[in-house]
Length: 347
Image (cartoon, rainbow, N blue to C red; front, side, top):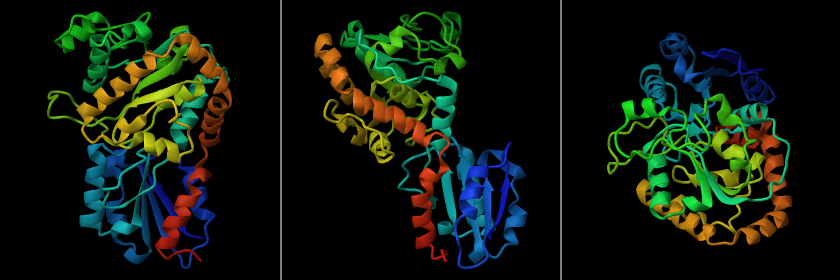
């Protein structure tokens, strides 16, 4: 049995501990599972005493690893503690990171679990009453960009849009300058907890959901906005579309749609051209998304209603896929096995 230690967690990471303990290794190994947001409380001095050939570190967090704390932690692990790069794994909500200096095994299990628990949706294939919904509780540059583009193209008549709906008008205008059209509400100010609710017909009646994900890149063309996450990370925003039998169109970082497919979700490529997903320019990507929305809005609503009936089995599969991944750490086991095998440590 390996030695497994963890630090920085409010509750022990039982699923990861159990997964490690079910592998058979060629020799005694020591695994440290660390939450990077714990900062200086992490056992760096203790790590220095462990033989480096037997030391493996798993940096685990439910969100993506774009936070500066991850960079600080990796710098210390690599350059001060001396952990080997191929002995460090980022096990976070970031689902695509080809440039990482260490191993990366993204997971959607924790966030799927939270979304399923908070929404408690039963599968119901709602009859479309409008083409799309685009919800934006908090203001961000890419969210403002897509909303203004939809308004400028006069596509707002086909859908339901909110922007900065988590703020009152007074709160918004005290923090942001610009358009007097904002905030935009579907009904009223939306709290954090309400963000998980999917019962409003303004939401459920949409065929497509223009999802502005939690992560997006910065752009020199849009200065003055802070971005916490810049790499592909799926959140409840996308997961709610699967639970509500909708087709997602994503305002999200490069490669996010591709990564969602790799977790088994049907992105309905026969209906939506997700070519925008591989556009490296984050500003141009938004315009390509708007092109798709404009094309989809040209489809008569009666045709969409018929189409949704035809798509019911595939929409059900996405709903079922959400429940498959909810809390299912074993879903990541094949990638862990591949990693351990390539490291030469499996018995």
